[in-house]
Length: 330
Ligand SMILES: [Zn+2]
Image (cartoon, rainbow, N blue to C red; front, top):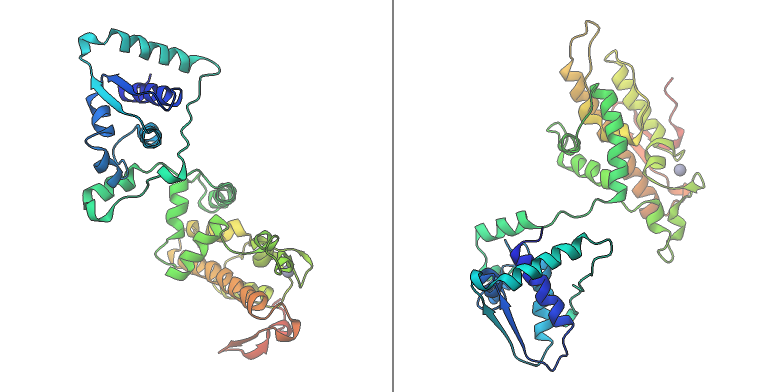
């Protein structure tokens, strides 16, 4: 059921949009709040980006329409006792909304009448906070939803229970992870990195959509878990070797497994939770994935995928070697 403000605002908008521009309009409105929002409080409403006003999606186009008219428009408040016709109008509105094909209101605002944002000089801490809280939730990104699903599957395997989106987001900010690594995981979750498909329609950079080393479509999965370019396999093998020194079995790595690393729960031979191993695993997996990504960026962006310019890794305990000449760990 529409609120009196919403019903009244919808009726006003409909009337304005269907009246000749040269006609003077006089609206009889029940809601005092609605009249004030469109007259005496209008400046304040626009300065605060309509914070706390639920019908802003109707009021903004009304204001834009009124500004586009050159004729006089007045609002008159009517008492509740004189409101029988208004009730009938609301009932008609509710009836219209129940129909299969209700009349749609045009709420597009021409650019020249578009006023948005919160005026900094007029805001207070309270009003800013209220405006942020009142912002409508942004629609879910398809890529993020897919990656969240993959991460939840892996987290369920690691934690032995179902997990929520909130738990997944919190795990990406785990206290064991550095700020840089948290940022890396967050971007991976959103698939926000410029990799693979991103380059497909960028003039002169279309070749970056393909891994020049493997000649297959490039993407984060390929970079972190499949690419045959020097560096990736070596780094995962080093991580595996370090992990196996703790006496635990190294799992098969996937992008979902990397993103779910915060849910690791390792048990020792006695079935006791090994929290030190949990922490090592989290750091090992996330840092290795991040380093592989950085190597890929250097190879592709800075060195143009030129095989003669591949990187040399310098490890204190193994010396310096060309990444594609390092012996495989058995
Ligand atoms: Zn590759």
